[in-house]
Image 1: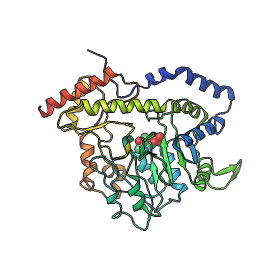
Image 2: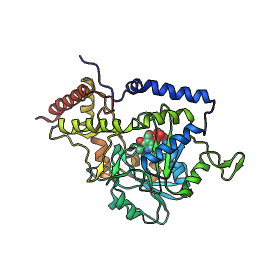
Image 3: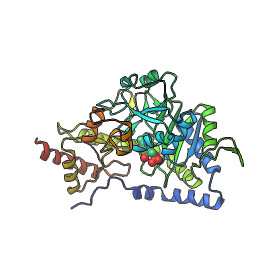
Image 4: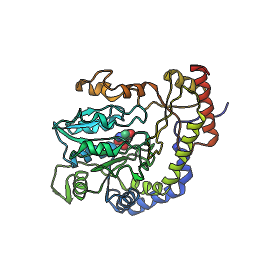
Amino acid sequence: MSAPIPFLDLKREVAAIRPEIDAAIARVLDSGWFILGDELSRFEGAFADALGVGHAVGVGNGTDAIALALEAVGVGRDDEVITVPNTAEPTCAAIASLGATPLFVDIDADTMMLDPDQLSAVITKRCAAIVPVHLFGHPAPMAPILAEAGAIPVVEDCAQAMGARLAGRAAGTFGRAACFSFYPSKNLGAYGDGGAVVTSDESVADRLRLLRNYGQRVRYRHELAGHNSRLDELQAAILSVKLAHLDGWIERRRALAERYRHGIDHPLARHPGVAPGAHHVYHLYPLRVPERDRVQARLAELGVSTLIHYPLPLHLQPAFAHLGYRPGDFPNAEAAAASMISLPLFPQLTDDEAARVVAAVNQVLAEVGGG
Ligand SMILES: Cc1ncc(COP(=O)(O)O)c(C=O)c1O
């Protein structure tokens, strides 16, 4: 039997760029400087340029990026912040960490992105921010979201969407601020934790730089209570290496996604929808299938590793039970959660492995659904 196909294998990525990574790490070690130094400034500049924004502020992780961005745009205790129930839990944890109340709106059944038509019913006077999530690498519909938001700040969650575009414009350039995660599995991942907030608003950038570093602009003078959340020099140096490879890696993700889209041809398989004008970067490939758990178990038997993103929507998670939501409140998010299965998709997946994934999925769907 052929070797099992991993969901993700970062050893392959490291092997492909090892000399560059070793050199970057050695440079930081030789500098003897590990926090808030030249490597971070260089990476922040390159990252901001790659997106076409004024400022990038490196922080400790993507969760902190969201919490700090919300704090920087003025969200505080007793405010409400609207997001989607099918996002990763940290989107919501970041909102809750400020003492604010997360509120949800349902998603579009096809793209699985925030449905802007649902916003007006949920926006109250207490709404202090809206957090659209560019989930799976697909951009959320920013024009109608911004129109509904009016003066309410929009903070984009781009954790899964580095490189995504909408009508030619980068995800992360639409809102007041946008938040990235450099968790190792992300399209642009560090070799540890990391994150960034980008913004073209000078005052938001200034507040973020204070907030991430104990509220100080100059040493030992604290303008705000602040936090400790900084992207360290080692991760910044590694990310600078990887940023130069990102376009090629994204093209490879898109090519693999096309293989799945065209190769998996069972009538019961529902491929992820792509909105007009959306440049999808396929952080994930969530196929929707009947009898998902059985499909996942059979694929595992055939040597194909998969994950579910995510099995239980946030409005039904124990952590958010106090919000009072019930099953049935967000039918599209609940239907997606019950039927999605994420297939292996990373730039170093080989053509042969992708062909084996396609064959295995077609075989299992034939077993499950006939045809
Ligand atoms: C959509 C989304 N938002 C936020 C986060 C949080 O990022 P991090 O794990 O870097 O804190 C993640 C990743 O885990 C994510 O996928």
